[in-house]
Image (tube, rainbow, N blue to C red; front, side, top):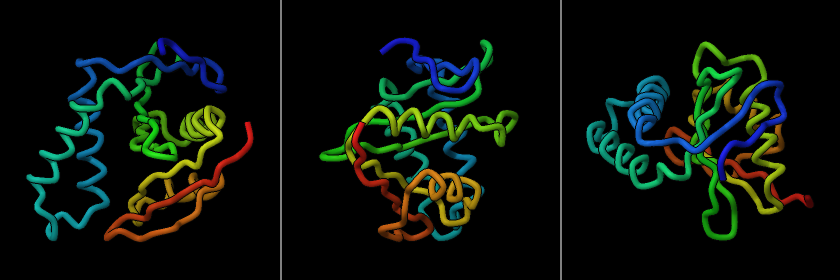
Length: 154
């Protein structure tokens, strides 16, 4: 998959490359620092795991661009009998203008399988987005909710 146009005026995605690995890691780290109870987890081990996951799955990440400027990243992939949105990062400068909603709607439109994701309980903005887009909690895992959107016909 090369460039994809997402239903948001001027928003496109293309495969992330090695030059994006550190930026994706830093975005993930910022979420952990902001929403995780870092004093109760093996922080360095968690960060090592995150770095390995990004490196091992970099080919599944998409970089987002609006009018040529990078606005974020996402990873949407099949995991067993469902799809998983492992990461959705909209850079702070671009948050609150509908890009996250557009990317999520794009992912939903790509499949008729159930879609699952994790969201930090304290990340109320992301939680509201996912709920508004039809996701519901089906499990709590420590400081995160596991959410699912059931399959829909294409």
